[in-house]
Length: 324
Image 1: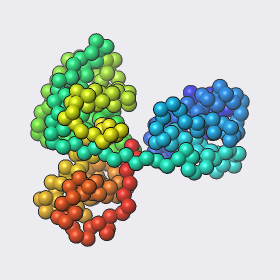
Image 2 (image 1 turned 90 degrees about the horizontal axis):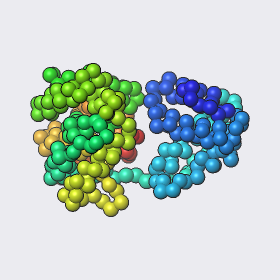
Image 3 (image 1 turned 60 degrees about the vertical axis):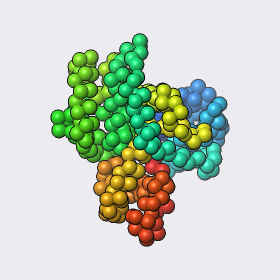
């Protein structure tokens, strides 16, 4: 946290200490705070009070910026102002409703045919002249996201020692809310990871990341997104997406959970009994985040409403998308 350089640096550090003490990683928000700190150092040198002028200059929408991205960028600055006020300092708090209402994304739930096309494209991916072994990494990373219901960031941040191909276990460390959890691979995924580990180890024998870049380090957040869009392009018309709403890597996690619920309910198991297990499997700390998937499953498999429990809908909380 020593890289903050504006007159607001002490307050920003104080906010980060508080968030971390509450168990919040706050990684993306910290990046926005660093960018805001740079703006303040350049445009408002020496100003230790968070003024309306500073805040509203940050709020201004950027070219081609989605409102959801704008909200994610503005929220940490609003939190900074509230923190400053709470410790007795003067600060302008950006009013609620600015910049606008969040647009809720409707996940793309892949059909079996679409998944086959996506993974066929992953298996056909070519190496690039820039180094790295993406032709080995891409097929495994996206299969793990789908087959284990992992968040894309969890897969990207896996350590080599987190994955035990011999016993089929995967330790997901300090995920959302700094909570660890263990998931287990199917035999075919286990074998897939065993072959991958042997192949990548010939290039990076002493690596720390399970998925190392050409330097042996962890990939950036943006890289799997770029890879995924490449796979979508390669799969072409076999994947039919809603206009203006391209599928994202996170949708593989959604597809995994919907498939799980679909199998459970058709096997006669009660969703109310399984919701606790599902929450642990997905790393949820909030039950509403888990119930959201039952709404989603019913949207894509309407017959599940009757099969599950005639009265279960009345007991669903108003679910929302979990924060990613």
